[in-house]
Image (tube, rainbow, N blue to C red):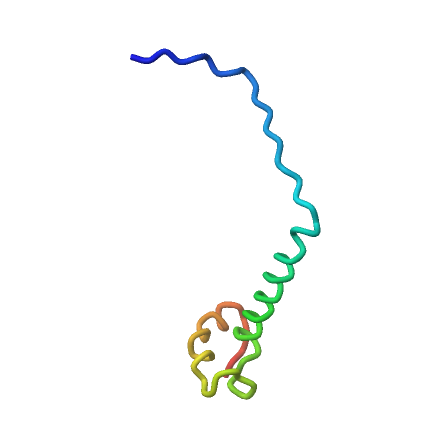
Length: 72
C-alpha cells in the first residue's frame, strides 16, 4: 500500500512556440515531397517517367482511379 500526494486541482500546460525559421525547411521538404508524389500519381504515364517502363504507372494505377485521374 502506497500513500500518494493529492494531485493539484488545475494544471496549466503551455504549448511551446515554434519559430517560423525552424518550421520553414520542414514545410518546404514536405511540400516538395507532396509535389513529387502528385507527379507520380497524376502525370506519370511512362512518357516522362524517371525510371524506364511503366512500373510506377502500374504501382499507382488503382490510386489514380480512386483520385479521379484518367489513365486509359
